[in-house]
Picture 1: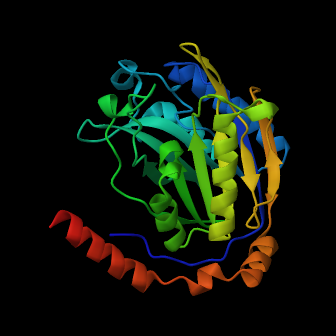
Picture 2: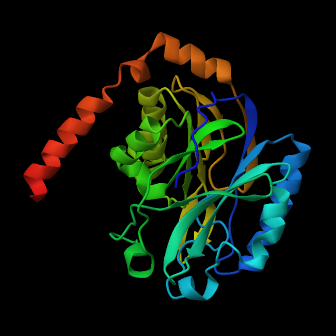
Amino acid sequence: MLPERTNMPLQSFRIGLAQINPHLGDVPRNIQKHLDVIAEAETQGVDLLVFPELSLHGYFLEDLVAETACRLDDPRLAPLIAASEGMSILFGMVEESADRRFYNSGVYLEAGKVHHVHRKVYLVTYGMFDEGRYLAAGEHLRAYDTRFGRLGTLICEDFWHPSAVSIVHADGADLILGISSGPGRGVSGESQDLRSAQTWHNLNNLYARMCTNYVVYCNRVGYEDGVNFWGGSEVVGPDGAVVARAPYFEETLVTAEISADALRRQRSLLPLLRDERLDLTYRELRRIYRERYT
């Protein structure tokens, strides 16, 4: 049974993006890194602290997936859960389920408990990525109520599927939290900017504008197996303006103010959410599904 939905409007609060370099496969060391950043964020008045995808494990785990996976009741997570009494926290981990499947999960902690878990729906199994060999895909895309209002969590490749963003937006998320382990790839034209970075910035801008939402993107840094992760974490406002952005390639904590007034103002100027036709979307998707699969 799903929890009752409160529909509380988004509140103003201070968010922190923990752009870290996890140690591959070393969960205890990474938990301590999280606790160190949490302590720093407390001094800056952060209300919600966001870590990158698989922040407890590192990314290219391969055969280390089963060895390092954690259940949600793992006692090693207790210090993080306790820390969420005063500060809400989103972090990434390999979650071992009761039936011994392994998921790339974003775990949202609040008020001293596990409040919501998003299991990555779209696993990356092309190019340099091999997630589908080691991990199970999630089966749900849902927004969830928090003390700040209704939020949604997506993990990296989920963001590359507009349907995933549309679903959590339609489910009432006023702020979408995207966590990533995005490697730096390619350069773009004369600017020599990373093509992967430009693409992510464009996606965040597009989704913020089209959903008239806040979009929060937290990406990791560092090297694994010769692959570089570029960082560039950012908060994008509902008008597409960058509220805060972290530098490339550096571990850092970036903070920003989330403004309820800015969200309300943009939705008054651009009433896309008001005019959305979910009935039409549902009807046409059912038609497409029947034509394609039956």
